[in-house]
Amino acid sequence: MKLAVEARGLVKQYRGRAGTVDAVRGVDLNVEAGEVFGFLGPNGAGKSTTIKMLTTLMSITAGMARVAGLDVMAEPQAVRRRIGVALQEAGLDPRQTGRELLVLQARLFGVAKQEAQARAAELLELVGLVEAGDRRIKGYSGGMKRRLDLASALVHEPDVLFLDEPTTGLDPGSRVTVWDEVRRINALGTTVFLTTQYLEEADQLCDRIAIIDGGLIVREGTPKQLKADLTERLGLGTEPTLDDVFLDATGRTRERAAGEVQEVTV
Amino acid sequence: MTVVQQANVLGGRALRDSLRTPEAIAPTLFIPMFFLIVNFGQAGRIFPSDSTGFLNGQSYAAFQLPSSLLLAASFGTAALFLIEDIEGGYFDKLRAAPVARTSLVFGRLLAEAVKGAAITVLLVLLSLPFGISIASGPLGLVLLVALTSAWAVVFSGFMQLIALKTRSAAATNSGGLIFFPLLFLTPNFVPRDLLTRPMEIAATFNPVTYVMEALRSLILHDFDWVALGRGFGVVAVLGVVMVILNVRLIRRYD
Image 1: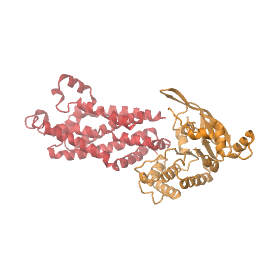
Image 2 (image 1 turned 90 degrees about the vertical axis):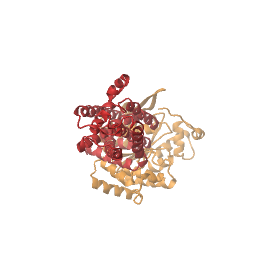
Image 3 (image 1 turned 180 degrees about the vertical axis):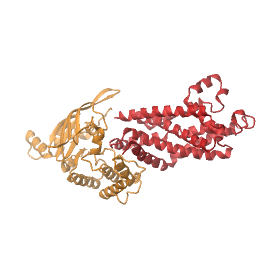
Image 4 (image 1 turned 90 degrees about the horizontal axis):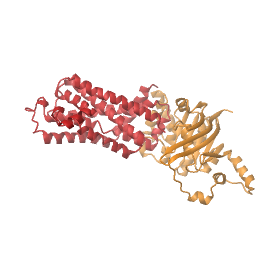
């Protein structure tokens, strides 16, 4: 079994004014090459912190992480060459055009100028932004920005693609477009590691999922396995949804989850 | 891709950002010109060119021009663009690419150097109607542009430090105001030897004084290599310090 992402005892502590905060408290992960892995959890559970550690954007307090077979702490530049990243905020420069942004991104990955132009054109076509390609990004809709962000994470054909809440804030149509794109990328052999708050999304897209709560993994398996486990454990008469699995794993009730307000201090 | 090539690519993007935000460039021209006109208007008759030795036959506007050039080079808008990148998530996108951390720093500074040079040339051209000429000639003008844009790099480096540390536009803006006391603790109205003793001491300890005196020497005199050595020395030392601190901060950025 070839692992695309591997983590052992991953810990992240922040030192803030209020003292030390344990954002991630010892996460173990095994993501096989070629799978779509969903990383779920309530707000403040440690999803984004984990993804930032795995993508070299945040230092690791303790533990070990390997991505695409490379040690994240020891070889961060090599890891960066093998991964694509689209974070929660579509990381784009609003003053550039879509095409300029993609060309720049390709150039930063060492692609020659002409080749970068060709790759940008190819990606704009792929994400349906050919017409908007020469317009400044500040005029793009949320869905267009998200698709461009996804395209910019693919300029160098990464082995592992990290997507942090790729469909948050998108309308249903744009969400389905992103799902199709994730499936297409995965079909080409790219491992996809995605965090999401939409359980339907995880159910639709992911081969396996892990649920994190309070900085610890509390469930891991295929959506089918997790539902079956819950059915068996609670002796349910009908098959539960992934929502039920999530609520059970995080110790939340539907009522509490709906009314929950969390304050996160970093 | 080498560090220099990466810095060039990132610098090109930063320059495009600047050119596409003319509302951010306009004050860097308008405010220094405003100070040049006001200061010349207020003190021009106190220091007539024909009887004021330190003007070397030029108008008082020539004496004031270095202050305006340094002011123009000290807006540090690059740091505010950086804050936008941080807040919008684009900075993380760049950090997640296999780009040398040094290039992330140099890209913006390179753009500031080019922008600083262009603004300096424009300001010199705009000040010609005030009877200003560059006494050291074309080579002097080149050195004048180089020194002013080098100062722009130093000051942008300082502003970037605040931006990276605080990640706040408000804090970065406030940090930029530090230049005003530094600008006024210099021989900006009269030469250093005419300042009161406390002001002279303060000006002597202020690095901006040496950059200003070097610029002034190029405008009012021929090449004064001692003044130029001090001016370029100050920006070289401060420039190295700023780059080292910026790279260190980006490497530790979480």
